[in-house]
Every structure is written in structure tokens, then in C-alpha cells.
Length: 187
Picture 1 (cartoon, helix red, strand yellow):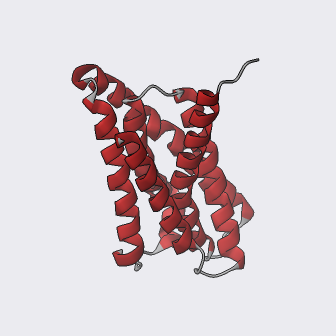
Picture 2: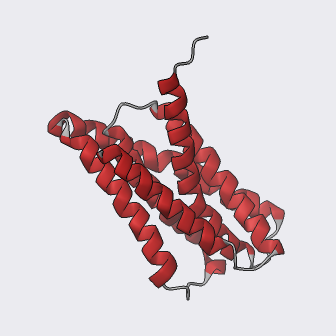
Picture 3: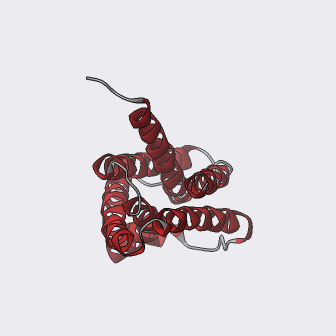
């Protein structure tokens, strides 16, 4: 099996984007995990987030594919700008966002659905960007789902054990990764 440098580059790019998307789930997971969640609840919440991290980019990819046929070469630039905007938004929330949310209400019933949806909104935008580009879409959404669910679980587990100090730094890293890859797509 001959794997080209482009395929490895694409894999590493998708991995870093998946980790950037997962960083948001991780940081929120730390805060939610600090409420003292049981392992069964952590598994349920992280699985739901993982599924949303697959479904939301798929919706975005289909929208992006449709729009790429309409706007052509401008599509890649638009996708890059969206990644930059998302990264800057993540950074803005870290430094100026409201920390007063009650995270314990987000893990049951409709609250779980809304929590997973809100954590996965950035994955929708990334999916839109990827739909505008030539990229292995199945690999992308699989990696996003695994990273989103896995990092949410890791964040909740860490939140159970430690404090709030690490969650914010992971979101900063995630925001910076999105900005860097957005710039890469534009240039």
C-alpha cells in the first residue's frame, strides 16, 4: 500500500483540526466533570458529544459541497476565513466569555442534547469549510467524532479529579490551531 506525502499531510491536518474541535469539548468537560459525575454519566455524555461531532460536520460538509459547486475557487478562501473566525471566537470566549453557566444542568435529557449541540457547533462550521475543499470526508468526520467524544470524556474525568485550571488553556490551544489552519487554507 503506497501512502503519499499528501495523504499523510491531510491526515495530520485533520488530526490537528479534530484535536482543536475536541479541545472545546475537553475544556467544557473539565467544568462539567467538576460536578462529580459518575462514570456511566460520563460515558453517556461523551458518546452523545462524539455522535454530534460526526453529525454536525456531515451537515456542514453537504452544505459546503453544494456551495463549492456554485462559488468555485472562492470556496477555499471562505472556508479558511470561517476557520479563522471560529478560532478567534474560541479565544474571545476564553478571555472575555461568561463563566456563570450552570454546567450541571447540561447533562440530562434535553439539556444533554443542547449541550452536545452547542459543543458541536464549531464542528458544523469546520464541516462546512471541509465541504468546500478536496479532503477525505469520511476520515474527517470519524476523527472528529473520536476526538470530540474521547476528549470530552478525558475532560470530565480530569474535572472529577482536578480543578478548573487546565480547561481554559486547552481551549486557547484549540482556538490557535483553528486560526493557523484557517490562514493555511487562505494562503
